Image (cartoon, rainbow, N blue to C red; front, side, top):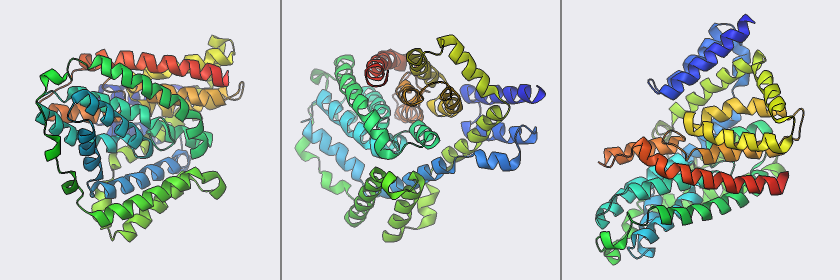
Length: 420
């Protein structure tokens, strides 16, 4: 019982530090993980085994590919093309950028996507003489929605797919249909919510013909090589089951080939990898292993079964909505890591497939609820504040609540019709 209390205490302290954000979340996770070892809740070998290296190296590989592609100017070129296609009309530009962001986020880390598109968005909004806030909020919400479509699009998906042994094609086949429906509803909702701020009457007339997108592509040879390697990596993901390769192996192979072919300086490329995110996962895996090892997860699973009477439909809906709420409060990455063992325990008494999709949808779509719901949100809010356009928690909530509720209603119907 002493170990149970120690594990529970360390787990709660770690999550309290993550929510409070007084210290960096990577330090919080590492503190929790090391404390689990030092207090004897898990052994050193057990802790290392608990780390899901498939997740770590999948993220690292995709980050390397994205960092090389960043040097080509591709995303800035796409954004300017969107402006020209929208003929300088703000609401049209927003819709196009939302689509570009959502599709890109399905195949690249959504944090990378918003970081690349945000500076161009700020330039466009400045040229139009309107606030960039509606564009930025719409783009980051679209990135969270689009990222839900594939295994590699959002960190919670990587965690779930690795734990449930779901391959790329299976994940996309189950998630992409509902993501398309949610994205379509989001676009309609975004046009309604931002129609006044993005009114053409309040915008300067932008001479779209004067925008020279060709100057934004800084290295055409590198762009061609990057697109070939990225395409080959995605194709390999699609045939993951046939190839009998883990996603991490495919991603790291693609990253290695691209660095070799592009003659990249590994010091330069690896320097821009988000090591803080990777070490955050490292510590978090050990923290979660601590509460699993002492049996706390099994107790929570038993409570959930008792609460829903063992009903699969009720358990699935509870998991969907609860996941969205909690992901909006504590960030969807640590929440998903904590819930995975609970879903695995529930899978021993009921069919587990609907539960995995409920967790994925709740965690991904719930990230839109608040500023702290997803890493991409925090980064975009920071960029907006730095540009002189701060976004308050309450302002975000005004848009996040309706978007999340509509997304979850669509997901509820989808899960019920397809799986229950």
